Amino acid sequence: MTDRYAVIGHPVAHSKSPQIHTVFAGLTLQDMRYEAILAPLDGFAESVRAFIAAGGRGMNVTVPFKLEAYELAGTRSPRAEVAKAVNTLVFSATGIHGDNTDGLGLVADLTRNLGIRLAGRRLLLLGAGGAARGVLLPLLEQKPAVLHLANRTASKALALRDEFAPLAGGCVLSAGGFAELAGRQFDLVINATAASLADEAPPLPAGLYAPGSLAYDMVYGKTTAFLAAARAQGAARLADGLGMLVEQAAESFFLWRGVRPPTAPVLAQLREA
Ligand code: NDP
Image (cartoon, rainbow, N blue to C red; front, side):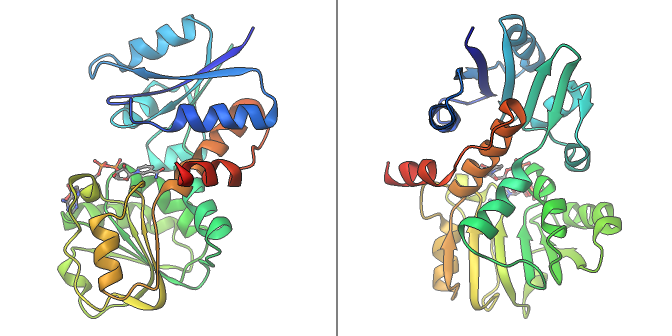
């Protein structure tokens, strides 16, 4: 019988995951079907259980259910525990297992697809929500010299810094609001805020971008207000989050099927579309 997988969210119709996983399945000759499931805002757990009862083997979880997925999972990977958010569910006879592949997806996109070396570099991470949480540990594991967290609500960035300080190793982990960034320079600026979804850019001071620096927006599919501002402020390179999306999907696929799909053809196909 064909194995069933799905992405669950609200909204979910815009999700590219069905397209990505269908191509992965074709490339790796896996007998599986992948669909999109719109769960009611108050019906996440019920929708997951209904999918399991119908033979579902695994799910990707998107906005706004990553925290609920974390709570629903009976067992969780160490990286999901640290992120306190789950984007991948694996169903088996022993129950529901939760994992988080977002951070690995970002690091794979930065290092493999974009050829960025993170060790010893100065990183600025904008935002302190679920996406920022999910990528913090994988970024720290790359051993940057500096990782500064900046958020509209500065207290949230400070709380995140305090929580992750024991995991920082030799990296200088600091935090604050946007205004305090004046006078500082970074090699990589990652936008993990939801500002781009409202066509807004975080209000960043001029002079942030070091020569040769990269501006990276986790939002994908368009030149966002953040990327446009970064270009105007001197960022040498711009990238959107499409590569992260494909790479996190590949990691989920590996968790489900034990096979690592090639990502380059899928990324090229999505960019063309
Ligand atoms: P959350 O709702 O958890 O967090 C939102 C964050 O954005 C908060 O830090 C919030 O600041 C900030 N924010 C919202 N609006 C603005 C604004 N107008 N100006 C400045 N800051 C703002 O969202 P997530 O962390 O889950 O997601 C963030 C983004 O990352 C989304 O756009 C999502 O699409 C994207 N994403 C992309 C992925 C990919 O694979 N490419 C994977 C995961 C996420 P405050 O605390 O002050 O409210």
